[in-house]
Length: 289
Length: 170
Image 1: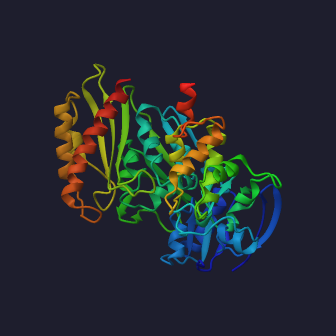
Image 2: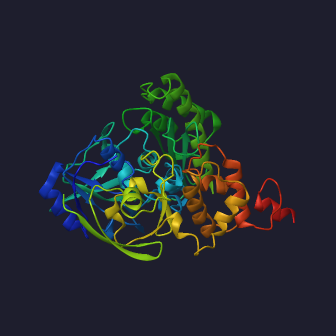
Image 3: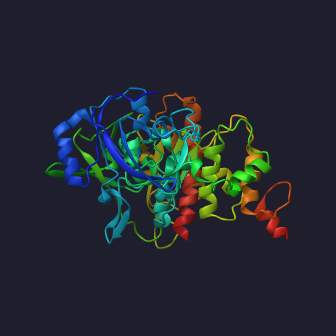
C-alpha cells in the first residue's frame, strides 16, 4: 500500500532540525524509529507534508552519566537500552525495553518515540515514572525540561508543541540501597501490547529493611501511564514485609482506572495487585544486593 | 514530492538510487531493485517476513522509509549465498525440512544469522526469542528451531536439536 505523499528532511544536527520544525510546525512529523509512524502513515491517520528524520543527529544517540544522574538520547533504541546496565534501580527500564515488541521492532523503536506516542500501554513509561525521570524538549531558540509525571495528557497525547523535539531523557541519581523492577502481563511473550504493566523503585534505609522511598507506576490501566501515589505513600517508613507489599498491591489496584477495553476492569485491578506485589519483591531484592 | 538520492551498500555492492520519499524499504527492494527474496506480509511490523539486516541487525523493512538507508549497509536473503554455495543456515533449513511454504524463511534465516553472530552457541530459548518477531503461518517452528541449532552445532545429532544440552551431555 502506498504511503501518502510527503517531502523528506534529514537534518544533521539538532539546531537544523529545530529550524525545520519552526518552519513547518504541525505540517511536519518527526521520524525516530518509525515503528508507530509508518503504520500511522500507511493507515493515513496522519498525512504530514514533511517528514523530519532524526537518525542523522548524533547528539540524540546513546547514554552518559554524571554525579546528578543519567542522560539518554531520545533516539536510543529499545535494543540498546535492554542491553545496558543502569544499576539495580535502572534495571527496571532495561527490563521494560527488553519486552518492547519483538527483536526486529526493538532494533528500530526508540525511547523518545515510545514516550511521544503516549500510548497508555507504552512499556518504557512506567519505569521512567518510577525513576522520577524528566525529558528535555527543544525548539528553535528555547528548551524546557518536563517531568515524566507531567508529560502525558491523554491516550496518544502529551505536552509537546508541534515544533518541539525531545532531545534527552534524564534519570536522577538514586541513593545507595535502591532497586527497581518491571512486570508486564500479556497473553504472549513477543509483539504484545501490555494488558497491565507495573514498575517499582524502592530505596531502603541503612538498616536494609525499612523503606525510605518507593514509587509504583502502572501502565495500561488508565488513560495515561500513572503513579500509584497512595500505595507508595502507605509503604514509606514501613518495613519491607510480605504483608505490607500485599497491602500496597491492594491500594494500587484501587488507584488504577481501567476502562475495561482490553480486558475486564476487575481483571485489570486484580492483575495490578499481583504484579505490584511481584515488582515490589523483585525491587526489594535488587535494592538488597 | 522531491525524490531522494541515496547511496548505500546492498549485499556488499554500492547502490545509488533515486527514490520517492514515501517509498518503504521493502517496496524499493522488491519493486525497484527486483530483490523479491524479501517478502511483503502484514506491512505493520507484526509478521517479520520483510526482515532485512540493517548494519547487521535484523529490522522490519516495511517500517523503514527507503530514504533512511542512505549511508547504511543492507543485507537481504539474496546476499547470504556465496555464488552457488548456500549459507550454512540455508543448507541446514533444507536438510532439516524447516521450509514449508517458504514465505517466512528469508526473515527466519536473517534473524538467525544475527543471533549466531552474537551468540554462536545459543540455547533453544535464545533461538526462540531471536525469531519471536518472525511468524510462520505453517507453524513449522520446531523444524526451524532445530535447523538453527544444528547450524550452531553441526555435529549435534540429538533429536531435540538442543545443541547446548547436547554438548553438556558429551
